[in-house]
Length: 509
Image (cartoon, rainbow, N blue to C red; front, side, top):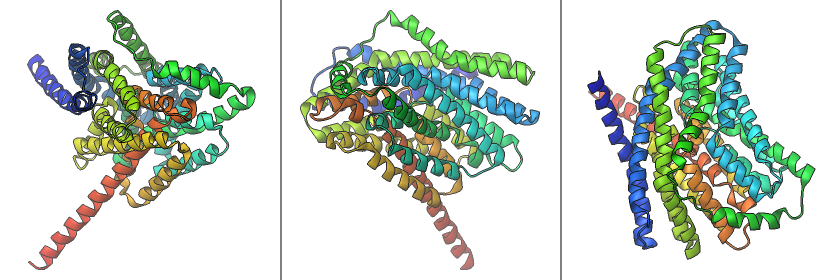
């Protein structure tokens, strides 16, 4: 048994190292060939990336043992219990509790508060986003129960996002769009996906591939609406004429602050990881024992899986802080100082692609997509298509900052294309495409992308970090939806062509 487990873990570890190769190549290429300096902390980078690979392997094995089974088990138990109220309350609580503690959201909220000179309150911004995600997961679960097509909800939501944009203060728009991309955490995504798929599998007449996915898409969409409403309220109550000048001064400190790894932070990182996962575990066990009143099946195995997820996520974060974040941020700032726009776009494209390929949340969704589609959707192909979407999105977002164009023109055109692709794409790919937009911006991508956006807005004359610096994460969330639906349209066309050729062959046989 132990021998078999070690063999599986060795396979996971091999795949993790393979996933990190693109990041290593991008960093080495820019550091060696373009900036032409050897990083001071080269050993730390190598050790850090090794720890990241081990963390990824532990995380994936923990998901398979603990998070996926308990999420699907809860969904089945709720469906049997037949209580819509408790199911919706569980969905809301999971969404709210996990988002409040989401590190990426905390980082973005603190940056927004600093840059806006306190006009945007970090705590209330987090509460607004957390409430919107709780509402989104509950609405997504209700959709599965009712059996409504996801496209009606998503298209209606995008129309609402666009309408609110015309009334929202210009300072809040980029931040609102970004908040939709930072809500879905590395642990929340697998649990929410397992809940949706488990629910769709246990209700007669539902298709797990078509109805089971989509909860993450809801969690990415509603914060954009809620945060814009919060911005309208915040700016109407406490607008200050000094905000823009203060933003320029405070952003200078924010943009040039590059974190360096400190060994004494190891213990606090572990505590932080436990704190992030604790609300999820508390909610799960409360509903399992108090509401459903049923012991957790295979508790020992589930517990081992949860511990592996915590240790894996902890190792992953420590490895990133040791190796990737310091050098990634340094390269971003050095490139903006070189005043070569093409290099900035190339770096944005490559860093978008490489970090997405290593994103644990995307890996979790891709594994589920391959399993539910019975191998029709290949997890590696799906991840590459999503990574391509993120790369295009971040490169275009970087161009938008350099050009100084308003963000909402790009986003509105992007949503129009999403609506058009939704009509053309096969049904089975649409919910996965919508979800892929939410899982791309998590543990790895957000800090690097946020640093690049703020660095560009600070270093380019005439740009306001509050208005122009945010928004890259929104681009990284939007374009994967287009590339995944494009992949589905192409695959369906190829399948039909193959079928016609086969029929033609049989007719002439």
